[in-house]
Amino acid sequence: MTHKTYKTYKPYTKSGAGYERLIVYWLATTIYDLTVVFTSHHIKAKKQKDQMDGAARSGKQNIVEGWLERSLEGALKLLGVARASFGELKEDYLDYLRQNNLPLWDKADPRIRQIRQTPDLPYKTYKTYKSYVIYTTNDEALANLIVTLCCKESFLLDRLIKSTEQKFIQEGGFRENLFKKRQDYRLKTGD
Image (cartoon, rainbow, N blue to C red; front, side):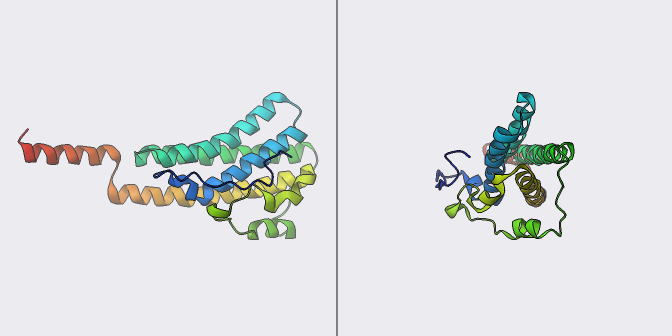
């Protein structure tokens, strides 16, 4: 485990950096942290380690970039990339379980139910994966934990993408709104 295992992080409070209030961001951070722990201990091939770490990082960073994007169209694209990155990462864990003859825990398994029932931590009290530290003792448990968290993250990203699409439908896109402002300016100034 890394030195960050039990460290509490206080969100950066710069105005406009609202991604730090998103559960999908903090869950992505947890998935990234756990993936780094997993690959450091259980993945021998450097290329595979880099690929898995990169997919986890990409998912997290695309949430940030999408949230900071001024264009809703751009935000939707980046959130879609984040969603795809977590899908790719989940598949890497499923491959690991299969190739190492380890079981994928069923949805009805009490361990999965416990993971799924762990409440999403509010951003003000987030602690990196402390709730899940018992799963980091072996590869089967950790891989199943991360598969479950990737499924949860994908579900939450789907909801965020849908709400962002709805906002786009109601408010229009960046270029569309900029064009309206330009038209209003031209009407006012006769330009």
